Length: 247
Length: 74
Image (cartoon, rainbow over all chains, first blue to last red):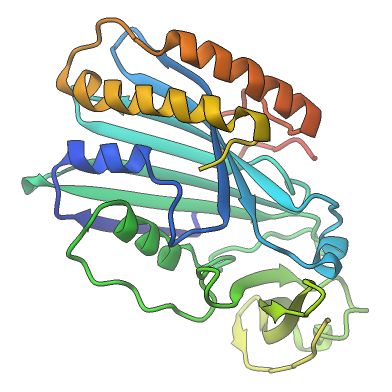
């Protein structure tokens, strides 16, 4: 159930891109990653380097959101396995979240290799499989964007290597740097016919929610807004806008 | 960049510097002889494993999940 995939070209040879990719964090374009640790590293019989890493991410979610998500932890963790093949010039990276797994799985796969048409240039193929769990309707989201990771991937890529490609303007719904309010677009199934945000009689089963952390109060508490942007049916979008602040 | 365990950050930085140097100057150039970072890695690892246990982070050997595999509930 592939949700999205994207290709990106770096105007640098593979070795340069790989060296930068291994040192991707800290990354001002993705300041939510606050910790990176190597859990294990080894060479296999074919001379490829395997690394297992743990990434700690801090979203600064306010208490009410943590309560909704059912977690007391402020950090979420991602486990990553990468394989670097210096002979074939291939770096493959797979990551998956290991917390909040009862709600959502975000499995990501990245592949860095020299561009087939130009060996001085590198191509990155990135794909994500996103699965939302705990669905009262027992159905998964097929073919819908749960999170706008493309914008993030572009930003990550553009900061890791000094580059000539244009910066992606921040799109509503992407993860943004802390300088801007944190925005997250979630597509979640409605929690049954009692969920007044969905009109089940009209076959509306899915909600697109925008969660924005808009600032901090003087007491240091994050202020947020949770806005319903749209509700969807299985057959496609229906445009109902419903606004309500959660905080 | 910090480590998941606050106490491990210095060890992490020391290991990272060693690794990045070996990676760029040896590994990518096809020289896989001798990893000079094993000592610093061992120290760093001990610290990280302790921090992971303390923070109860559910690290395991699970590989990338395809669409047909189940994830353990957390």
